[in-house]
Image 1 (tube, rainbow, N blue to C red):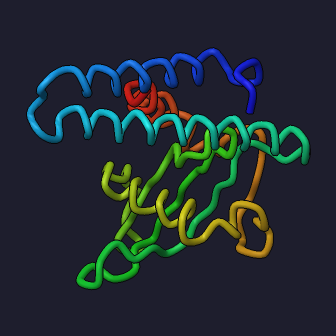
Image 2 (cartoon, rainbow, N blue to C red):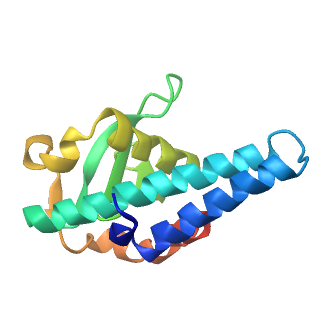
Length: 164
């Protein structure tokens, strides 16, 4: 990919990575400090590249931005299956809303960060098929999130801004 095809954000991240690597070679940092920061930066760059590719693919395919639905998720063996409802934003390739409930009659509760990470990892690493074949999995897709998630989205997206 030529540098002219990169977004300004990607160019900024690449510049930071290059400067960090030069700095790491020149200064004696405590072991792991710079390496961990570089790992986080590389992960952010990889995610940014994937987000750009996802956004282009969505536009090319004319697919809606959000995938959402309900399904059971196993967070741990002890806990067993937990009902979840979630919203995945295909344009940034992230889970942007999650609610859980332990029993069918219980009220929905906002998922913890660790639960969001677990469900997102399941969708992006182990089980991407539902994100593209929604009907087959009883999911919906639309350009707007479902009503229940609209108040959650601003809170859910704030941590994403801190990662870059």
